[in-house]
Amino acid sequence: MAMYLISYDLIKNKDYKKLYEAIMSYQQYAHITDSLWAIVSSKKAVEIINFLTKYIDNDDVLFVCEINGEAAWLNLNKDVSDWLKKMYS
Image (cartoon, rainbow, N blue to C red; front, side, top):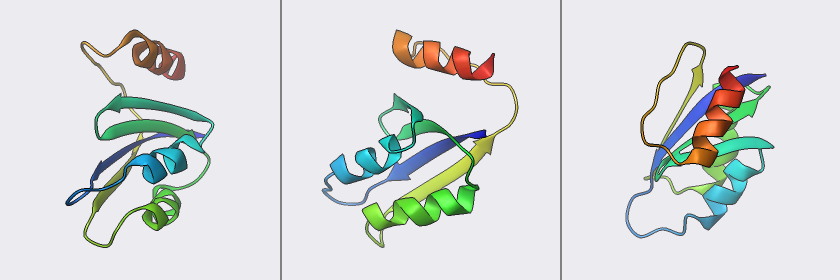
């Protein structure tokens, strides 16, 4: 299993609900900032992109990358911070 960051920019007025639900279908996830999530998955980044593209439009931007090094953060809410600490321990 690996941890991935998912970032997106949905162009124009969009309904984020379907994309959020798709991201939350991964059992381990955290909504870090408005357009940044972290998930844990056994899938590859391209497989995650292929899955999530079903929930966005052709003009939307989507970025997925594996986190395989150290991380640091400041002023995240406690739940997200605790989740990240757990995943990094």
